[in-house]
Amino acid sequence: MPREYPEFPIPSVGVLVVKDRRALLVQRGHEPSAGRWTIPGGVIEVGESIHAAGRRELREECGIEVEVGRHLQTFEVIVRDDDARVRYHYIIFDLLGTYRSGELTHADDILDSRWFAVDDLPHFDVLPDVAQLVRRVLDGELDAVNGEPWTVSSDA
Image (cartoon, rainbow, N blue to C red; front, side, top):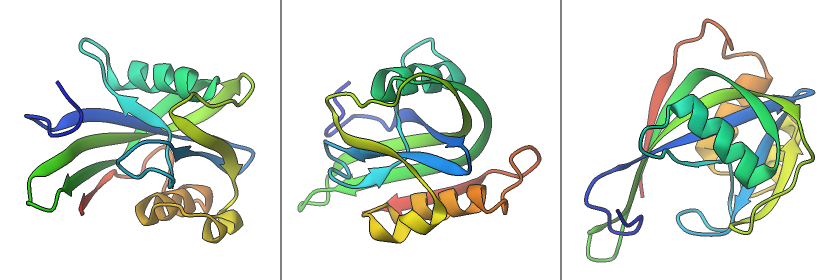
């Protein structure tokens, strides 16, 4: 199925990886959100669990191994063109991840990748909902074990 002008929403996974009170973010190289900083992840492949997809995506996008934990939120992205047709539609399951090993790199569809502290967020073009999630996790507002996931929708 094509990612641009899809027939159905595309299920995807993002992993908010935490290491030393910092969160891993990537600068997207392609639409939607080209040039902006967001949580690394990608499309879930047929037959793949969201946890397996998260581990694979972090290995492919960032060159690291992670332990994937609980579901943090479900985020829906709908981007329409000038004629109000749906150009992109992703349903993203964001999971909490813990860094395990590997040297941080980035794939060719990523412009950059780096570890962010909460104080770094205002100095970069981080998607607002991503910045909110990073703050909640790093500041301990969202209980990484017992907190309830929430749903956010972005209809741009």
